[in-house]
Structure formats: structure tokens, C-alpha cells
Length: 378
Image 1 (cartoon, helix red, strand yellow):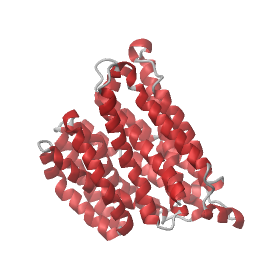
Image 2 (cartoon, rainbow, N blue to C red):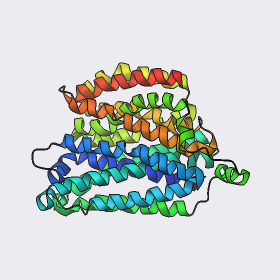
Image 3 (spheres, one colour):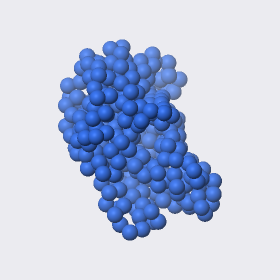
């Protein structure tokens, strides 16, 4: 169903939009909300709170999705995401309220993390249960992440050229994000529950609940897979923009445009063997590509393709492992907890004393190897 796919496309677009704003403007937010002397790394690490609290939202809103409906969980998650995103623009700066500014910023990051966890718990399931072309539909909604990052990057370039950006114009970026959330919520309200969930209700099947979901062994295998996949995601979305710098952002934009077709291809034709081979390619090419990219920005296009294409397989692969009656809770737990554990990559790169291009590529090599091994175990 096109409407269902587009509604969820906007959800993942918003996740990436928020992520990209925090990453690219990390130096600015460090000066605005944090005590003097704290660097952009502190802001990037504060994004770790967003990721760390996703499992909580994945479990709670996933349970709501299994018991009350996938759409119900999605509407709730988008409602609160919109409030928290807009709320960021109302935080007084550090020079006005001191440490309370940093505390409010971190609390909002936590709130966004909780309800974004609900997005992944019910979003993948909602689209896969509505769609006939499951691989393509899942890859399409996953491509929303790329569009969100692209949109945020372009808007930052546009708004930063306007007088007063560092005083008040930056807030418009969050107003736009809040507006997107409202649109996504409105579309979801106009869509019914999935046919699969309606069958569960009509059959009177008992929903397993959180404890039943946690006892599934496949979740452990998926978590191992996510350790590698998150290295692929974060290497591109979090550190490539920092390596390229302002002068190389146009190549980041071009890279995003080239990654979208590759997502659809792997969404349609993915297999465990293909994913494992892709992991080997990532491990072998990471260091040479990142070294070249530090001098030749156009190499970012190749980095984008090798790190983002496997994510096209994510929605249909993950949802296929779980029974419908506990699907949202199981997906929420595995995806959100996997993303939280995947923050190892950010910590490893940020705390390394190596140059950024080298540390990000070395740990990406590790991520590629993890992806290879775990794909064979799935």
C-alpha cells in the first residue's frame, strides 16, 4: 500500500533529519548548550543517549503495537517525536540558564530516542504487513533515512547563509522537522490497521508479550549482525560529513543520491550469502577509500554505496524471523537494542587518538567482518 509506505518513509526521513542536524551542527550546539571548553565530541556522544534509550521505546511501543495495533503505536511515537523536536528550539542557551541548558538538551535527546525506538518497532512491521512487494517496500521506507540526511544537509547549507543563523534562524530547522512529524502523523491516522493484525484480533490469538519476545534465540544472532551494520551506518552518516567538512558537503549530497538505487536493489535481491560477501568487500575497501576520500571528496559516493546498500535488506529480513502475534515487540527489541549496542563504533572512533579518517575506516573494517560472520549465522 503506497500510503502506508510513504507514511513510514517520512518516519525514517525524520530520524535521519534529526540525526544529521545534531551531527553537522555539533560544534554549534556544543557552544550553545554546553559549558565552555566542551567540544563537538560531547554533542556527538550525547546522541548516544538518543540511541541508548531506543530499546525502552522499542519494547513499550512494540508491545502496544502487538496488543492495540501497529498504527496506534506509530501515531503515538510520531506525536511525541514532533513535540521533542520542536522543543529543542525552545531550550535557553548555556549563558542564560547554565547547566540546566545541557540537561534539557540531553533529556530531549532521550525522549526522541524512546519514541524513535517505537518507530522501528512498528514501522517495519506496518509496511511489511501491508505490502505485497515486501523487499522493495521495505527498502523504499529505509531509503527515507538517506533522504532525511540529504534534506537536512541542504537546509543547513541554505539557512546557514542567512543572517542571524547562529542567533535564531537555526530554530527553523527544528520547526521544519516538527512539521514533517505532524504530516506523517496525519497520514497515519488515515490508514487502517494491517490485515495481519486484524486477523490476530479476529482469531483471538494470545499475544506473547515482552518476556516471550526476549526468549527468542534469533534476537541474539540479529544483535550480532547489528554490531556490524551500525558501523556501516554511522561511518557514513556521522563521520563522513565531518571528514569532508563544509567544502565537501556537495559530495555528501551526491553520495546520498547514489545510495538510494543501491538500497532498492539489495532490498529486492538480498540473501545471506550476498550480505556476507558484501561485508568482506566493506572490510577490504574501507581504509583505502577513506584515505582517498580525505583528499578526493568524490570518493564519498563509493563510501555511501558500500555502507548503505545493505540496509535495503533490513525491514524484510528482520520482520521475517518473528511470528505476527509478537512481531512488533520482537522487531523493536532486536532493532533498537542492536542500534544501542552499535554505538560502540561512535565511542571507538571518538575516543581514538588516530586521525578521524583512519579511526573511522579501521573500525569500519571491523564492522564489515562482523557483518560477514553474522550474516552466515542468521
